[in-house]
Image (cartoon, one colour):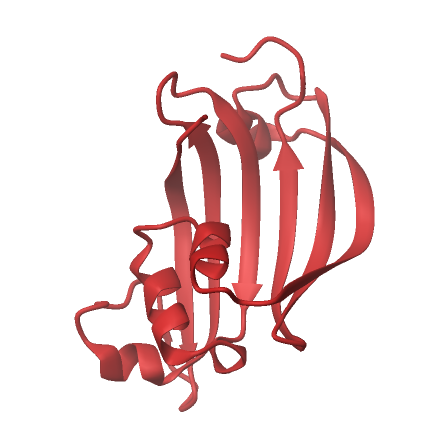
Length: 147
């Protein structure tokens, strides 16, 4: 069984008072509790071989999740999906669209591709306990040689 890790590229918390922070101290629960929207961009890699598997951006509404689930996600210590599964959050994934993507410079760097390589992805909405909670974009590395 593969274990996953990720490289963080960007995180952003938008607070109810309009402030935006690129990083929040998860040791300060009052900051987490004041978050209105949370976005993060990551590249997922296999832990054992460091092979790039996927690039993703998620935007979530913390108010659609329990406080403890939201705090676990914000800590960044456990992959988002695993947090939802381990906390028995009912998940419904609604596929929005499948994408054929031609890699530009930045995506090529993230996925270890050549500029112009074609990869595929999806956008989806995840409902948690029947509430729209997470919007996501995932682009997979593909079945070619992994580097």
